[in-house]
Image (cartoon, rainbow, N blue to C red; front, side, top):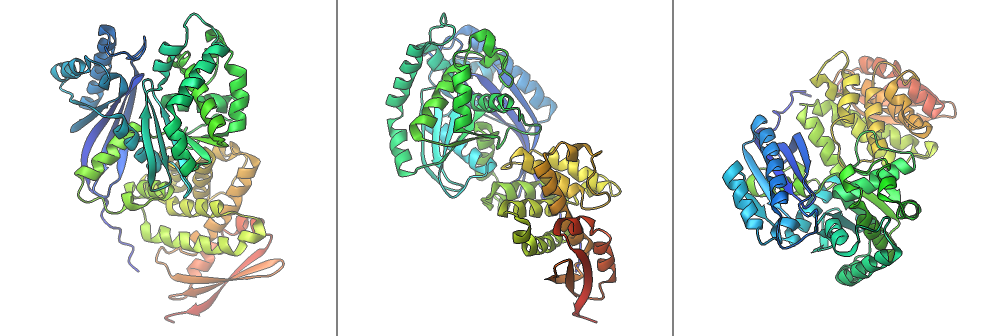
Length: 528
């Protein structure tokens, strides 16, 4: 079988998406490809606090000056990165201001950036698109909530369909200015009750939609929800090392955290790890809203999406502007899609990698029940197999170590942090040394995840050995399990001496995991 690799997807354009929010401006610079993939080139976040004194019908001169200067810095970055097109969308504070048009014209005149003020409904639609693309969502509906400074977007969706979306004027800057007395430190019980009454009245239609499409999980996006997630992770001593995406916590954990910190003063909140300095006061109405949602809708689990409006802008641009985005965007599983985006970016050894994945999964299925493994473990093994050779893009000799680094630092979407670490470590151990205490990234794993790495690596090492030639000589396998030994019988194209040698020399972890000595034999040769 030929191992000639297909030509990599053609890069079509470099664009920048700018989300002009009420609290902050976010710029995302990406390279677009014909297959619908996009690679992040650079990002920049500027806290501007357009509604520092509340969301009113007029932007102050100081707020407009901050906004222009933030966009000036963003333009410097886009110019440096040779961006071909800038797509800028403005949200609540600008679209609701009488002089929002003045600000938009000033930006055009001074910087040449054209801004489109989008409706709240479109904002919700794009946020939902981004979260569906970047987070693992089940077939059951999830409630998506994006807490901004001026508005809060609510979306009810499953992994592919949207059932409901709306935008409410309940943003944290608006709530703080309208209902919380700045001289009160901490917030009073009466102010909390007032906010809850506002939420109850404003969210009646959300509650009705929720009753028809009941969700058991809340997915939060954007800065306020990310800060809440990070604070809770720090509070329970499990801060993320790689990404806030898929960071999760239970409602019970949130309630315990909320009860402790809602009575904090500004000074005490400033000491909370995970909380940005400019959100010290804005976080209060955000916490009250999350507490209200979790109690009212009896939601048990919360997780965070790192993707929000700016990624939605990119995805919508791809849909409209690229005539050929046939493969990747049609994959509804964000985990598989992001893995394929990663490997295709690095000109992967596709035929070999898919074949190794098939063999590894065959071994996994034989021992799944014996070892108490889950379907999620199977998926992690598959992704490790698909990515195990991407390090060749950098170096042949150390490609297993480069694979570890590339997987850990590739902003994979839809995964919890520990899952990324497991995939990276399993890919790293497909060759050479088995895991050791002296290995930094292996040592960082919990004992449970170290065990998982050793088991899954055992399957991957044998499967990789069975395609030692990279020519898919071994077409199929049968497994015969004894009490203390295991025999793998091979169906091969030609004599499989090289493959048997390649697999048996890497069988240590397999034998450790299964508790059986391994023997590999030729069973059927298709073309002797």
